Image (cartoon, rainbow, N blue to C red; front, side, top):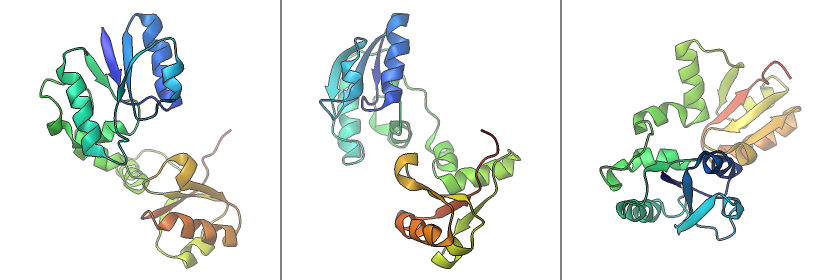
Length: 190
């Protein structure tokens, strides 16, 4: 069996290779970076050069589709945010693409942090207290300490742990340019 991983730059991709390879599954990676971490795994086969999916999503999908059309792969395995792109652009991939991702409507319910919190509430799932901030004044009055989170971002770039009102106001300004800002209490536990 041979699979194509959707990207090669994350530790997630590297871990996928560490599981697939010893299991006898050959894995190639799609990558826009010639020095991506997964390329250095002994379990990594061929690298399919793709444009950065964030910069050229259509070009990325077209390149992956071309790689799939040659019949080399038994499965396309999304390892990161490309799962959303494959759901949104599924119609641009070959009809017989062996890909298990949810419909785009399902992604829309969980992709943003605010929408995901709303879904958890609707389903009665436990989560730390949260609110959506619409202004700097609200950020200054939020219960501290808390996490301020851009609704659409990665944890490393779009989250700030704040412990003081001035810090919360600055974090709100940094995060608000990307859309709604979520204020969420820390989760209990270690």
